[in-house]
Image (cartoon, rainbow, N blue to C red; front, side, top):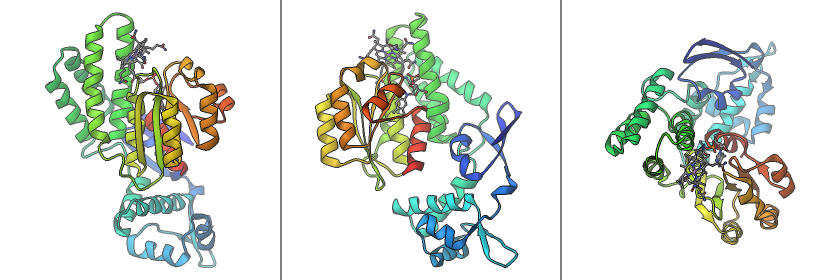
Length: 328
Ligand code: B12
């Protein structure tokens, strides 16, 4: 992949389109230049084998919905690119969520060709920084209506992922730093995190209804920092997952019981400090034996995850959820 900064809020990326997902949502404007070697490389039989969709159906998706525009080999065979393959996978994903074929195709085309972080209008990085500062001022002043207005504006102009990853996570980090430096009071920090928590709860509504893979997510006993876990769940649910959210300070026996009951595709346990995990080593190892387990948060380490037979989610909650959705 080649990236080249064009201006403060615009980046040029040269890569296979299939690689775009994780990168694009970070920028407000993106110029797409397809790499020549992403031209058609797969015959329809190979594409069909890879994605598990018959060649007849692939042709129908191509002609009815314009899902892809294959090139032709010298012998006249259709040749599909890796980007086409990812588009079929996105189409399958949306079909599994219950969208009609036309809606699924349209969503798949949007996702693989259009800049996901751009909402109804283009918001530049400078404007995001300005709105983040406005949000911070309103919350510092205990001005809930003003804070909600800024959040309304952010959520109407940007995707949820962008608001979570590029506004709220950096804001929360900064909030913690200001609290540590005693620049703000505990009351200000509590007020701010509770307004944000309320908003996240609104975005989380319906996260138990997804028809895709199922995730059980929790913080271990004693761990109250559940905001990033909520963000993770929100983004997963927006990609069709069903999320069972157990939240802060969940006793490990309860988590094991729920995992046993619902047979999730993924269990995520997140904590800020390693001691929260260290207290539960044998229980977590037991959980990892019966459910796919991932650890997350600043307290999770590679060593710990390896010792437990778990995976480590290394990215921020939004990127990690996007990555999980692509893995399944
Ligand atoms: C809001 C907040 C609270 C709220 C939590 C509200 C809630 N419902 O979540 C409350 C008031 C309860 C709270 C309490 C405390 N807090 Co506090 N809190 C914060 C604050 C400001 C934001 C937390 C947050 O959401 N962070 C989100 C992002 C910014 O967190 P991050 O740790 O950088 O995480 C990164 C990765 O690890 C990863 N990640 C994190 N979680 C997850 C989860 C998933 C699923 C994935 C995939 C990835 C992922 O993504 C992030 C970005 O890359 C942080 C500041 C901070 N830096 O985090 C302090 C902070 C975490 N708190 C801190 C402390 C000390 C406390 C208290 C001990 C204070 C006290 N003396 O009582 C208690 C402990 C409570 C407990 N028993 O858990 C310290 C922790 C220091 C440490 N490492 O030990 C911090 C870092 C503040 C600081 N700068 O010192 N806190």
